[in-house]
Length: 98
Image 1 (cartoon, rainbow, N blue to C red):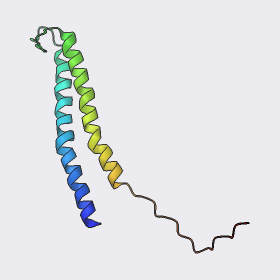
Image 2 (image 1 turned 60 degrees about the vertical axis):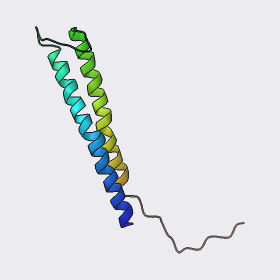
Image 3 (image 1 turned 135 degrees about the vertical axis):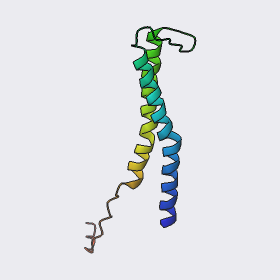
Image 4 (image 1 turned 90 degrees about the horizontal axis):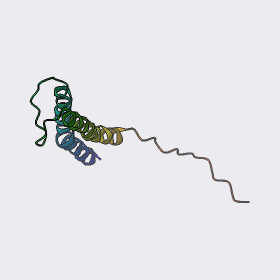
C-alpha cells in the first residue's frame, strides 16, 4: 500500500511539473498578450500580423489552454487523495429466499 501511495505522489508531482507550471506560463503569456492588444501604438507581431485583434484572440486562446493545463493536476490530486467510503460489513444473516 505504501509503495502504491508513493507512485501516486510521484505521478502527481510529475503532472504538476509537466502540466501545471506550463499552464501557468501559458496563462501569463496569454494575459499579457490580451493586455498589450489594448495599448495604443504597441508594436504587436503575432505570427506576422500587427492587428491588435489577433493579439487579443491569441491571448484569450492562451488563457483557455492554460486553464485546461492547470486543471489536469488539480483533477488528478482530487481523484487520488479523496477518501473512499469503507464497505459496510454487517453480521446479520442473509434471509433465505422465499
